[in-house]
Length: 108
Image (cartoon, rainbow, N blue to C red):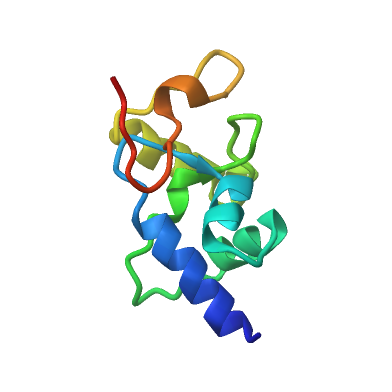
């Protein structure tokens, strides 16, 4: 299977993450099917400029941004904060509060 096909599936999943929510690399990989969290990371790093994919909404399973500040981490954090996502004092996002539940999300 080509990277293009895998990336297309990954981008489709990421496009479903609503503003104000985040998903982990592993979660996106499971929903996209037949890929790994690392493949999701590669896809997020290669989003073409002409696609509007909310790459900033994908974080690691510890609730942290994986990008170092000098490579886009500060931008990612700023965009997420503008969407209403709150970081704790250790730079983590509470996945219980801000984590996306997946397609058909329902919060009571």
